[in-house]
Image (cartoon, rainbow, N blue to C red; front, side, top):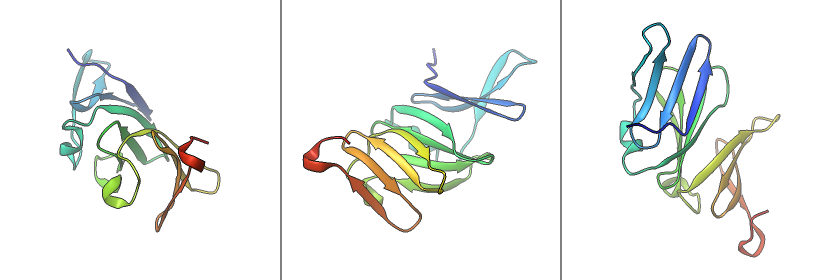
Length: 130
């Protein structure tokens, strides 16, 4: 059985996010769900998906406990990856929000991170979450 920790409603589509098995499109007419492929299916291997959030009309961010976060477009194409390999202090991304100024804020197990296209800044005084 699949467990779905998150979902997105995009136009006439509902996308279900499963913890380890990827994304699925809910077909309301057929009363079933079908695999929604993404460019980086390996992201789901051992990643424990935490949440999924729509960032814009065409972009989504997938956050995981152990594999960082990825931004994909509504067709499943990989646009950006965040994690230790890109300079973050952790791969545990618990939440994501985009500010009115367009900056991406990530809630992690190490604190709150403000991310833009060119650099990553982490904010946590004395290892305490702000």
